[in-house]
Image (cartoon, rainbow, N blue to C red; front, top):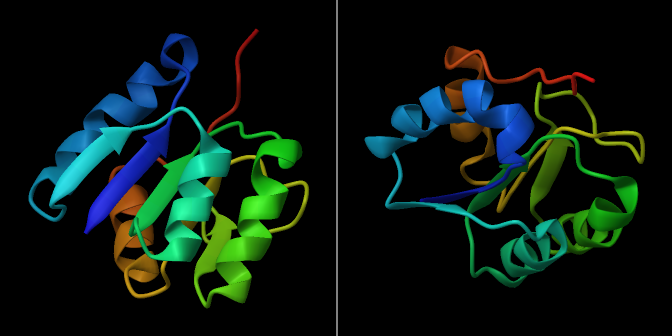
Length: 117
């Protein structure tokens, strides 16, 4: 499994840094890629396994979400609730590892994020 993450380091370090340790034993690779549109397209194409991100704008996610769903993958809010155009914190995957990544996110207490001013 490869796990990919979108981050804004100024706001997310306290949430994302401990989470990386959660995946070390479970993932073949962990990468930080700052282009949600690209990673969602790669998941739909079968090049990547999973991707999660915080505070993602709908215009960065909507097209990739459709690609993933049409390819048989899964996309949810990072807390596991149904994806909508209002979803800002997301987890998407090829579908096979979705529950495993969601469990790791919950165990690391990394399923909520609100941008502070």
